[in-house]
Image 1 (tube, rainbow over the protein chains, first blue to last red):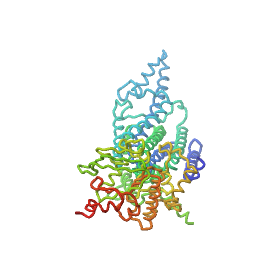
Image 2 (tube, each protein chain N blue to C red; image 1 turned 60 degrees about the vertical axis):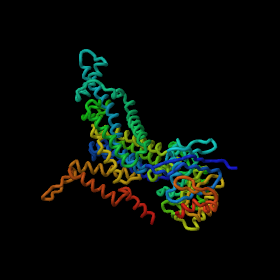
Image 3 (spheres, rainbow over the protein chains, first blue to last red; image 1 turned 60 degrees about the horizontal axis):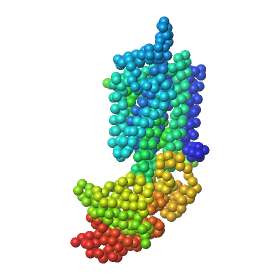
Image 4 (tube, rainbow over the protein chains, first blue to last red; image 1 turned 90 degrees about the horizontal axis):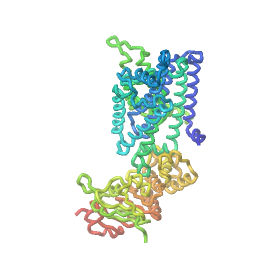
Length: 390
Length: 247
């Protein structure tokens, strides 16, 4: 099967080759390998970008292929980040607490350790006890399970309610916005059990690897992100090829016709929505340890809208388009807003890109929608067509 | 003696007070070819919507098959799976996909997401697709995107998709609209051939086309059956003449 699948989808091989080459180049140029042309923080940025590419591919499948304009997929991304962040924070605080208590005369009891860890983590929101949400936070395995389970179950419940009632189009988009807004408002509360607007921090420190320099850890996460993106790409390329792809694109183009062919459209939508939510959760779990901090603003409605903009600019309905869009736009965004772009003095007014980047992005979005509906990915069609003519 | 395949009795449905279907009763056997005619607003499309589960009637019964299952509690996809196929008035094929993909999607295979995800092409499936394509005259167009087909070819493709579902009852809404005389003839043949083994209901405006189908005709008017019988019989019916020519 795999043989036939890859030979029928040459773009998958091309993408994997490009990703592999990119990973190799970054590794060679990193500080760890000795060249040191790329700083640790830049490698983290690249690793984070790979995670954003992964969620963009998921978004492309749910929107570009299945026609569900979800404006809430960053909620799943954030949940993945919180799930892994809880373990990272708990485990690291526990190590610090044990070390400091061990210097006391009497060895600490387990309760004393738990209390001290709670004090450390929840002191900022005026609490000391562990909320029920943290029940599994001492187990890496269980929290990794949460990375997959919580986004999956949330998407399953949300999708089941929405699709069963035949909510479609812009109404569904609004509902997904409401979902991510509700999640963000909940997380902002101090008594949510997730430290309110402080979020979870210090996630870049991996428990058990205190002695390992960040330069090395950043490379590990970069590799993990590249691996996840590669696997996710192959998974989704497989899902959207063949008969499943036919049915999914059929649902996008004419839902009721698919229904009269005997397919239960709602189940298919639920399948795509849930699968993409799970992958988004995994992407988030890889992103936030590289970012070091997660707070409720990350799952604000605007984040999911950006995601749709990336996919639209990159080119909907082709997986590599989503990756191009996410990579180009998010890297440009950090260049412009990070002060990388020179300000333009007009004499009477100075264009500062930190303020004007959003305007530029807005114009690009409108321009792409009007003039290049196929997005950046559409450029490949021109190349391929020229190649065919020869 | 043929068995009754589908039976509607006492079916009524209103939209905002307007009675689109009014105490309608209808039967069709298997195999049978039936034409339904009627002026605009007679309820022809609503009639099909009720059978395929798109519209729920306010009252009445819709019973299908020898086990007499009621269609009223089933979803559209369940009804389709139990053997009722529908062709819409406007040709609705998946234009972004090839003729082969369109037919493959319609083939009567398991319809669950995991069945479809793990589906593998089989020689029997490919053979069936070619057989169907030959029947609808699209054997040379299998790899073309169906959006590139002519209007008539799209209509045939949709009929082909219906046949691929292997239904017991086909509901066909204005299959000849916008077709050239030669295309109409092909369409008539297709429908007649299909009706040798199945029940086929054709909704049509065009009397000439109905005459060529050479079958029993049901005349609908204001949501109920006005007359039923051979075309000659119903066209001589005084009520039918009044409805079609105005009083």
